[in-house]
Amino acid sequence: MSTEIEAKLKVDSLQEIKCKLAELGAEFLEEQLQTDYYFDDANSELTKTDRCLRLRRQMVGRSEKCFLTYKGAKEKNEFKKRQEIEIEVGDGDSAEKLLSALGYEKVLVFEKKRRIWRLGECEVSLDELPLLGGFVEIEGPDGESIADVRRNLGLANVPHIGESYAFLMDEKLHQLGKGERKVFFESPGSQL
Image (cartoon, rainbow, N blue to C red; front, side, top):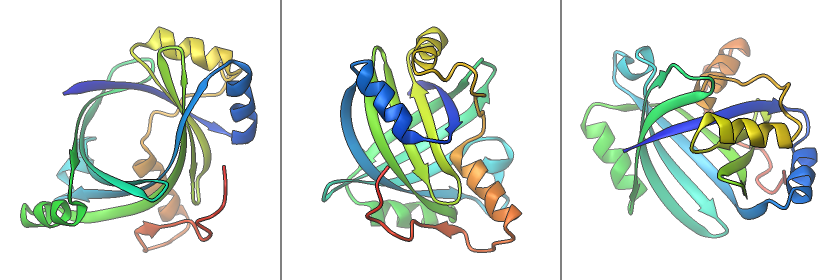
């Protein structure tokens, strides 16, 4: 069990942030295509209590890994802080069947392109999501480390977004009047 501390920032240009990371000597780690499946029970108890249960299928090149993650309710903090329990599972299909057998149903599915960099003690993710656009997530051991990276990237004045991508996607689908709960990139080959 660990605690996740991160800042999420909406940006107009991921390319500018990528250039700034390179200037600062950040280490590029990898590019991922993530498909996130969010589950809840029939009464939406997880969503109502600000928790989530997610199965992530993560592609790096042609290699897929699957992770089952529970995230607790947000704790009071300058940035988003919450309990996180994550395990790698060898068979995503079986994990999905297990969740279904336990009474959880898929409530939202969406893709995300993520490029991960290491800067100091922080992991910096450049995320692109269909319908939502570009975001920078800075995850680190504490608020001070995150604030330093945020400043170094020239993002100190960009407001931190406390909501999860699932919440933002759900809100966007509602605004658009879409009943479909699956959101994918139309062109899987597009770059960040």
